[in-house]
Image (cartoon, rainbow, N blue to C red; front, side, top):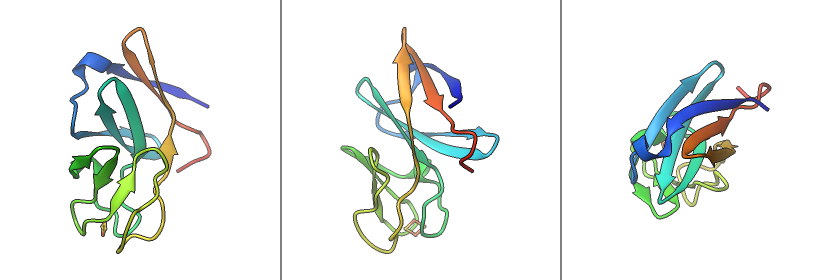
Length: 106
Ligand code: FES
């Protein structure tokens, strides 16, 4: 488990995604009120960037073909995507967001 410091929660936009690039990981981060969710940024269907998709409650819609992914589980709710995207743990300490990037997950 490797915690990466993302930055202040107050500077994370609400209602839209932010893409985080780190060695071996491309992550889409979403702030929903004071909670932060992180899923793999590459859509499991054809690799569109989920950080660029619109947010609906606790799911993000792929901007290319419209599958929605649950931010908590990574599961798609409908076609054309059939496979989940990875999810990542996040935490907020003293107003700073951290993201857990497992070393063995590409
Ligand atoms: S690329 Fe995301 S649903 Fe097709």
